[in-house]
Image 1 (tube, rainbow, N blue to C red):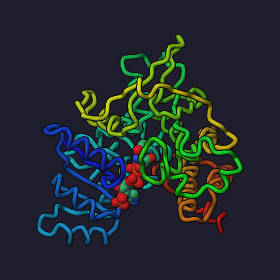
Image 2: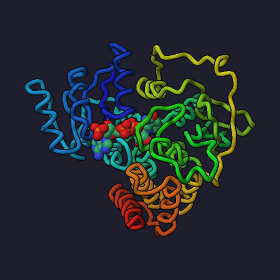
Image 3: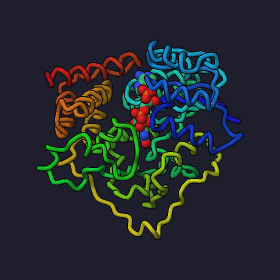
Image 4: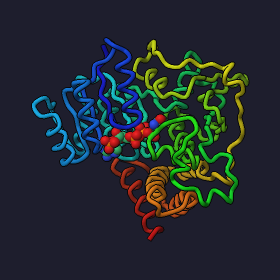
Length: 382
Ligand SMILES: NC(=O)c1ccc[n+]([C@@H]2O[C@H](COP(=O)([O-])OP(=O)(O)OC[C@H]3O[C@@H](n4cnc5c(N)ncnc54)[C@H](OP(=O)(O)O)[C@@H]3O)[C@@H](O)[C@H]2O)c1
């Protein structure tokens, strides 16, 4: 029986993590949950899983949760300290880090520093402070197991192989809902159109990032730190069917890939049960029905955002954190109608190029750089 804490339990990954737990009776016990503002959904989760400690983002949400649960309420914490407390619960064996955005960094870093096994969905933790988080993992003996499907695919394709013999990593990308749209139509894209992802059902931020291809850029940065590999050896390949989740090419030219249906419960279960596999009753991959797998190079003219990630890695230090913050603010501005779709990558590029990177020394500094990135976007938007 593994004891699990889920950070971001009310979100897309959090809910699917708890679904994997439900489908694996006797394998997992939920000891802690951390959420944002969705007290109603968290209350349902508390009734179903009976964790000892839960945390919400604000004191108001904590009061709402207390009212909803009455006498059956567990210990309720609030704020970032609350999420950190859940991330470091002494009784937790595995911590699934699935808060969205830079807000997930502190709790992820705390879980790593506590030497936990961390199922990492919150890619922003490695985008903002990958070097520090990985160094902390090495120091504390924490295992970071990827939940992002591409990184899980690479992790699985590396198993049993010699990492010294890797030539390059190939991250696949669905290309998002706007992949075939002509350049003149991209300007007028609405949030509703950009949120209509063809293969995956995910939170709003990552869905817009998939439409701009910024998500793939952030994944390049995540892979750079997670697998300790130079950015020049990480390639992006658009694969609209999202069946091949990523690949590893070895020095002899042989390529190992991982395939599966587009269901995040696959990578979630792999991280939760590692090194075992769970017998999950998910839809099987029927390649005869899929028929064709296609691939194409990403288009840097229509979707320039992914290239900013390589640029940020080249600039180094706090640059990826500034880019991540800029992207969060630009995506939020797009979703609320304050800027157009093409403005997301334009704003990110302007903020990144104006950023004077500093060598990264602390999580606080990474968060400050991300906040500066956000503020710069707000300044551009006026
Ligand atoms: N969804 C996917 O398929 C997918 C795939 C790969 C990687 N990821 C990564 O996984 C992470 C989560 O993505 P998602 O799609 O699950 O996002 P999501 O559906 O938007 O859920 C985000 C979760 O984080 C919580 N949250 C947000 N801000 C918080 C804060 N300041 N403090 C505490 N909790 C906070 C939300 O709480 P409330 O809802 O209660 O406010 C919610 O539980 C992201 O980093 C994303 O890039 C997701």
